[in-house]
Length: 119
Image: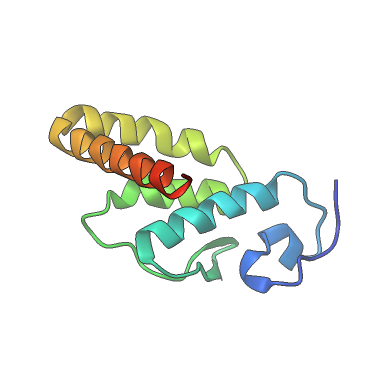
């Protein structure tokens, strides 16, 4: 277990903010912060509401809000955020093969761009 703060509030997990010991929570918070930037194109700010923390920015109604709400709750407040997102996303892509193909193609394009930039 670790104690202390990172010195950058935007990257401090709940435990850091509350002065509690932390371990993997900082990494799970970083995963949530990264996904937040991908969804919103801005750093994640969190607010405390009803004893738990959540992102301040609202999710758009067409973003599979139940899936992302569960994901952010698990990552920010402790828990398995990857498993919280995995099953619903797999079900969504199974029901929407065109979306799955579009995401696959976007990832292939990104991989090609990263390879080209590394040369």
